[in-house]
Amino acid sequence: MKRENYISDDAVVKRANEAVRIELEKQKAMDIPVVIYDREKQIIYQENSDGTRIEAGKRLREGRYSERVAKEA
Image (cartoon, rainbow, N blue to C red; front, side, top):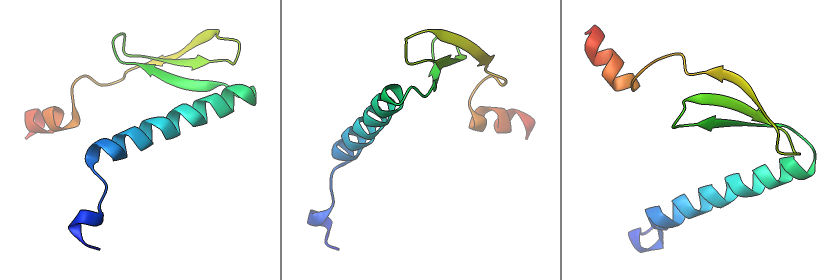
């Protein structure tokens, strides 16, 4: 495949975001709970189709993987 036939990174990101949005809408319509991670609070929630949120857990580790590995080495 030639380089000019590739799609841009922006197009890939847009398609991935739309795929996730569509899947979340589908699960909401089918009344299936969705698991969502809140980056600011670092808490995992289970969100029901009626909008209620139940806390499922918290982040276990601090920092990025590469940062943790660098400290251990």
